[in-house]
Image 1 (cartoon, rainbow over the protein chains, first blue to last red):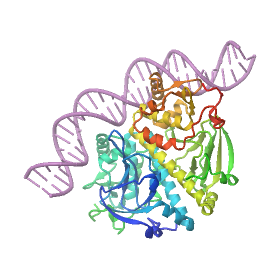
Image 2: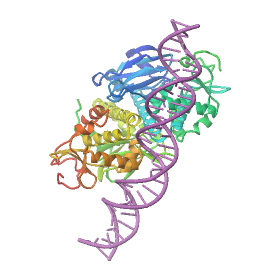
Image 3: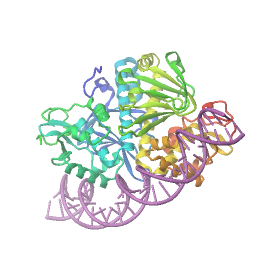
Image 4: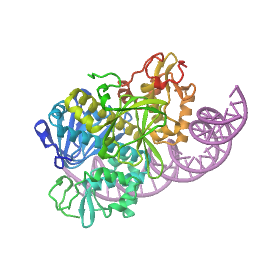
Length: 247
Length: 247
DNA sequence: CGTAGATTTGAGTTCTGTCAAATTTTGTGG
DNA sequence: CCACAAAATTTGACAGAACTCAAATCTACG
């Protein structure tokens, strides 16, 4: 169905400004009149916004292949995109330019609108998670998502770098950082996952983890198709690996 | 900027199945392989989903002019669209057919993608509301939205039919129906709005109501531009009016 | 090796959920 | 128009999950 490879949309390259990012690098969302498309090429990025009272929220997590159209961002001041992984690459394009291309390339039009639709579905699913699940279930849902998205299969289980701090997790799941810490500790002591070094998580069984979250089926449907999990020996996705050892 | 009138996209009519709806009428979301576009022509509709544990959630509220692409819905079983107003009209189109039209009509393509983007932004804003605001603030946000969307200016203030039951509100705002009832009663006794007959609310001052919600600015930006509030004597928007009297 | 930032943990508080009962509203049929 | 049953809403009492605040640890990094 899709003609493009993993992160796809290669044909947009001539129109894009490519930016190599480092952790915590921030990108402002242009105003309405300067509609912009960001394309995640590698790494994990976050859409973060701040409420008038000074608190912050993480609206969504972006993975390679995701498109971010500024017009689809809520009109909240202080909304920005931040890099969550140590390194990453993001493309920046003017939306009107993209729109022009779509007319001549129906395949491209189909692909972009499909991706945007899928991300809207993800947003809605996240809504469901926040609105309907307990703290524990929310964390389990996030861990399942990350295992599917940035995890690599190893003999010990699925290993992944956690790109979000406790505070990030809290801001994403509508919880408190203290509460997240408690929940993560509890899940760890229950053996749902182990911690191997700085921010590296090992999930022995995705099944067991998924069982902690009522809507894990939807999460898997949403993130598994886009998943490109591979053995830790794979050369791709270097973004996620700081040290090459499998554990 | 937009060439089309209020609910727009008239040129899609030949390709659409028009459905006149009555309250609580339900529409299934077609599966992935049968991507469909719904177009709200009049009335208020809800996207409702049910969790495995039997609870329900209302993912979003749709107003005239909104587009619902089934591929942008989360992959949750039991997700459906329901009519919230007594009467309404909805168009149903096959997405591939729409996609074909977009190629020949760039203006249409622009308009549809713009609407879909705006609705994604609304979803993200709703996320923010659920995740970051207290119960009272959430209800105030919803009331502000409804006043802007379906309200009509009268000498007594902004009058609107509340299309959502207490349970609906609860399912939309991630609260409990009992809690919603308490909050609504409290807001009413605080004079934020009055109740005039069956499900009819009167908001004396949008400013005062908006002050109850920290992100009212964004809500207004999001819903005011699409708003077509008019005096209660206006012939349009009959959907909202059961009895013609202004109070 | 020390400092700044992140994480963990404890104790107490608050908001919201739960359950049950009372009350109001709505729809229906004489 | 009234009576009645069903549904929706309101209200009270209580329980629980998550938040807040503060202090103790831990970690990264110069």
